[in-house]
Length: 213
Image 1 (spheres, helix red, strand yellow):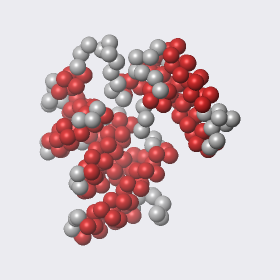
Image 2 (cartoon, one colour):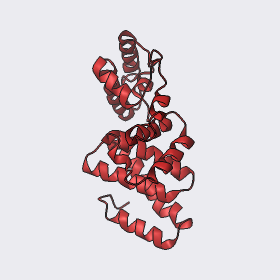
Image 3 (cartoon, rainbow, N blue to C red):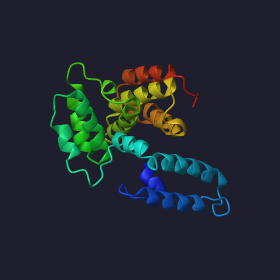
Image 4 (spheres, rainbow, N blue to C red):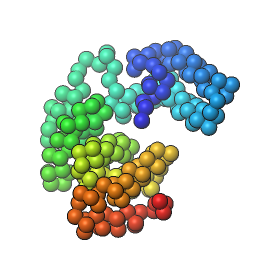
């Protein structure tokens, strides 16, 4: 998923005036007279407006940067070192997993997550905000799937789906989540996991309130 800065095509250090100019420029590019695919233009414009309304408001922008762990150059401390400084704090370590996933340190993120899961009582859901957990769990699932660890990917994806069905967050992006789960249980898990385990996972999927596909 693109960040709001990427949607507006601005730097994280951009001023409010630069954000306004970028919004006007991008809005013109999406105008129906210019864009010949109106369906795509409507969705893109909605994303553009959300990005603009967030980044133009100082309070909402600060909250967005904090949630997405976006650091600006004027921040003088190393946020990753700050999170690593408290290895026994589950909240700090959970945020470190998320931070590393967002900053292309996938190996470190999975290694830390595996070690945390070995500790009694650790549950990622308890130490991240709801939306942060859903984003983090999906990214973890993607990495486990790439490594062929389909059981781990399955558990994380079903957790994300439970949260989404309870209260929508991914919305239109949710189709990608369910398609990834379908691919796992129908095509990847049957050729690499014991049949009984796969059957149990399929039974679990059938209990979810998902479409027939």
